Length: 267
Image 1 (cartoon, rainbow, N blue to C red):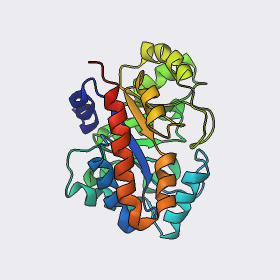
Image 2: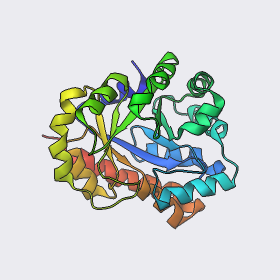
Image 3: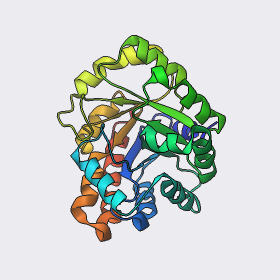
Image 4: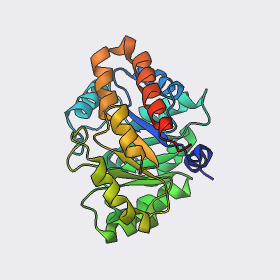
């Protein structure tokens, strides 16, 4: 059983909290500290963004974070080194890399998968690999005991949902809004309406992200989802409070969300 699967099994009825931060933001030396702060606050799985120069799926908040990281020369191998450092003290919390195909393809799928596994990565989500073109990616990740994770959106057809169900491992990430990361106006009722269609095909846990900014939106999504993914709100917080205050701010934010999610567990 993968570390991600074991985490969901251990949670039982509790919902997973999956925060996202960009590796290398606000500074490469701070990333492991921020990862540990999120775990201390109650995070169950960590998503770590790999900086890329053309982040087409990301809104301005995460784009700025990527620019800050790239200004410090953070590249894919540096991100793997951060995960390796995190693993020195935490061998339980799953880490998922989220990014774009170009840096991985430059390294080579097999070489990347091998090095990611050796570093302690558990899953990989590549936002610009559509499932129709991702069979080789999925196979390469699974060959190194990594969970390939895929996105679904409100516009996804039944055929695409079924294809993702056949390729994905770990969990599936449902994008609750059209557009780029950081979009607003989460409609929890619309998310709830699509879940029966997703569940017809998908047996894995389903996490929901995009538009989740606080305890109220997290709680609303947790009524139907298995996991809540929060990214832009955390990245914005890092930008707002600065490097010296980022770790305690992320810890407190995660604690508030974790408390809200646990309040949704039926008695």
